[in-house]
Length: 101
Image 1: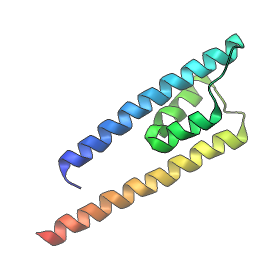
Image 2 (image 1 turned 135 degrees about the vertical axis):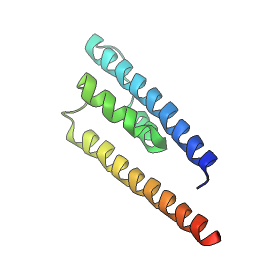
Image 3 (image 1 turned 90 degrees about the vertical axis):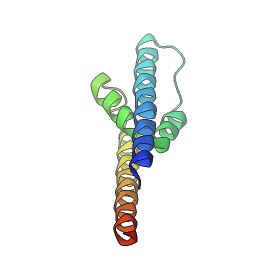
Image 4 (image 1 turned 120 degrees about the vertical axis):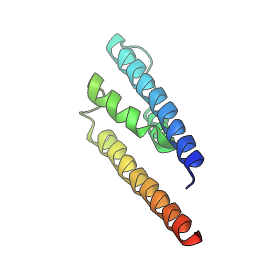
């Protein structure tokens, strides 16, 4: 993967992670206030599109949804799968670059 594409991917992950972190904070605030909540489906979706680092940080920092084993394990599963995908893309692109030279 060329340097520009790596930077784009990193920027994307950071932006989506910050959004996931903030949304986790808002959902925790809603939970404490007893008002309408953000759906778990939305939170899972946000994690799936790259927001899992922010989601995990928000869950741990705000102690939000950490007791819900299904949700917590689902987010951890998503993070492991996405890390494997990122690793595969990075190593694959490195192989392509080194063999092309």
